[in-house]
Image 1: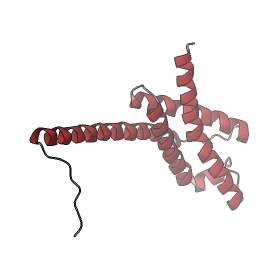
Image 2 (image 1 turned 30 degrees about the vertical axis):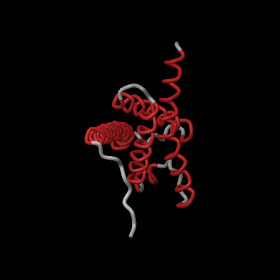
Image 3 (image 1 turned 30 degrees about the horizontal axis):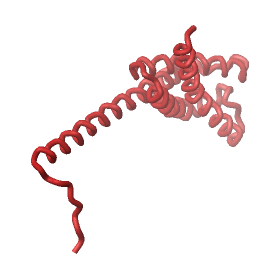
Length: 156
């Protein structure tokens, strides 16, 4: 395995760790506050929106951060990070809750969908930045051709 592939794998795992680890810790703290284990089916059924929302939000954050660091197509990065995050989540829940895995389709869609949305947001941001750069360059060229100098407005 080449150095480039190792770096890419580390990047995917770091994104998956963000997408799974932060919601896992937040749900643990919330579970301590309300007095239920997040691995219990009662907790999962009562607070399914919290599970889904935290997985989507932190999946989007992870997808954005991984896409920002990667040189690969952002959507491919989002899908890969999301699938890896899903697998990591299943392992974490299996280890910590002895098989009480929240195997809900909404949760899976939220996690993988969140990473895709996050990487898509980076893709959109990169396009906007490139467009702004082009506009700034065009404005500077127009000013140079017309002989105008950039002046700052004065008060008074």
